[in-house]
Length: 514
Ligand code: NG6
Ligand code: CA
Image 1 (cartoon, rainbow, N blue to C red):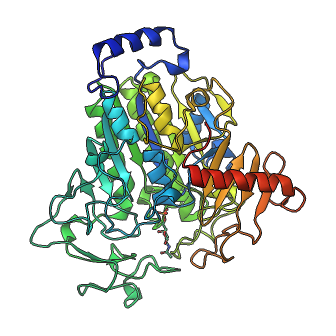
Image 2 (image 1 turned 90 degrees about the vertical axis):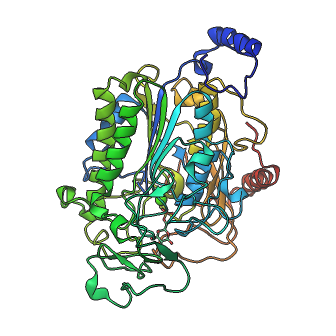
Image 3 (image 1 turned 30 degrees about the vertical axis):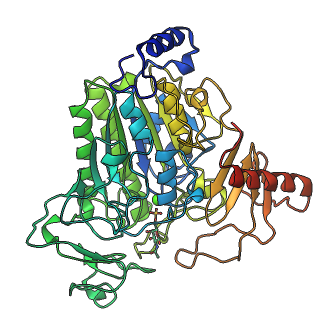
């Protein structure tokens, strides 16, 4: 037991006892193994987007290699069908719908996770890990009033447990289009300060709305404000010209930073949260990936994502770290094809099915919204295979606590469950119940799924996504009907009522039964 900080197991006696206990504990609870942990989280990658999950048109050799050597889950979930709430839950272990202000954030939002709160990063820090986040953040930065782009940007990742950060602050399609490394905008010239507005237009830079002739990528919905790198965005921005990113280089930039973090920390336990931009919009692959998928630009950025994942795996191999590194690859929410730019993704799909056999996708309460690719590899401990255990990103907190021999304090990760035995392939069962979240909530109890009725039924105008809501609610038996086409709400009123009650209890109690 060589914890740098032992807030939770303070006294020497406690340490000795727990060391002794660990000696005899079942393998899944051994708290002295400290594998490096790398989470590779794609943005909007669907259940059917990779070869190991059945894609036949898009080639993803690196993701497939990870699956071949690891455990591939078929019923693993993000909490939510969009980004901010999904990432909030992944880090905190709390259902995002319990907290106001966890919806899709604008690029100038303040940090929505309370500084000092236990997250997977601070938990691993306590176990002696060096922690880093590279890539998409989208959880807000700064205190009240949002971030000071021209000064020190805090609170942010550091205040919730990350020693190192290199961020895209919000999304690729939202201003400001600059990177933030630790607490500063990278490459900022203070004589050209950054200003950002999500209300009134500011400055006199051209917008997509007024100057479509300047665009290399045209919006299909929204996305018609300040033009950066020939692409109009959500929000207005002026200044920071020298600091602006080039979309085509983003995958390389993030990958380089992630690889450097691994190299610099190869001699100690480290935790890397590598959150790629791909395949989110705007899709602007590096020229070497253009046309490589045969399925249009969305396919090309999936090939680019696969390359990024491969670089991480190659780095672990090169540094002889693979056998004791736990790698998890997943996605923050389901897939979407037209998400606001006319990039040809719809026209060029070429028969590819981003959600595979699932109904719905991003924004949807059907399984396509939150059932995501999820592969875990730890050669020293996990036997390769496939698992149908029900698990969620929300369970990382409690499971990593178990892995590193820590106890969570009351109130930490209230909805997180220790599913470590399932993650390690020692058990085929994960959690019994799980709440899925899009515009409404759905209760999963084993293979049964109850979708609550919406306040009003509407299609998502921006994307034509299928929200999946029906007045009166819906009931599906996923064991028989993975594609959610046979609504049993009328046929099974008792079961529907029971699931509705479970959902109510989850809402009220703040806690599901373990
Ligand atoms: C939506 C955007 C969409 C995307 C999404 C967030 C429009 C019309 N649509 O509001 O393009 O940015 O927000 O995606 O503006 S997420 O993966 O970060 O949740
Ligand atoms: Ca997303």
